Image 1 (cartoon, helix red, strand yellow):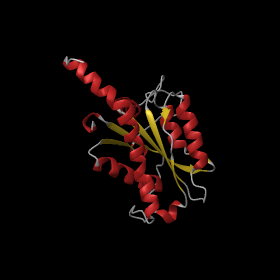
Image 2: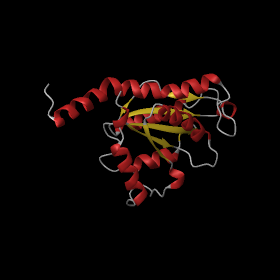
Image 3: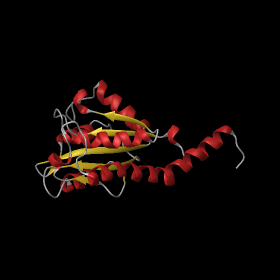
Image 4: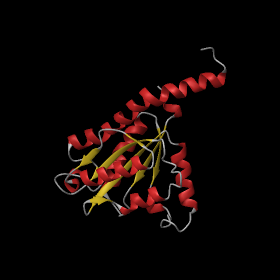
Length: 196
């Protein structure tokens, strides 16, 4: 496989201490890393991101750089009041114009307290990501009843939840193996002057 050239950026959409979004994302990050894939976790709790229209910041520029170098992105969002978090939207607004996200494959992971999960926030996020030029992958993962799905230490309490969240890595890697890695290998061959 092509793990050496693959970089995944995982963007967290909550800044609340001990948030469930981070707990779900940690499972996914662990799954990618178990496959020897490089993962950059972008945590807005550690960043200063300015409101739209007020300029940039070193943190915003660093985020753009990480996203620009990423092979694929995973957005992780809670559902707040029937929509995505303002933190995720602020991150997207700080991606520059044209967006550093444009042309990137994007997988979506949502968590919510309710029984139907993060369906509304994921639909909003899908629409926004598509609008800025991302290639949104099918099969977003929505974790419902998130307070009962994770222990305080982040351990998944339900086998199905852990399987689904970790399975999002399969979605990303399968897409990259079929559509991105063959181009990376061909480009390397051309650069090295290999005969085709």
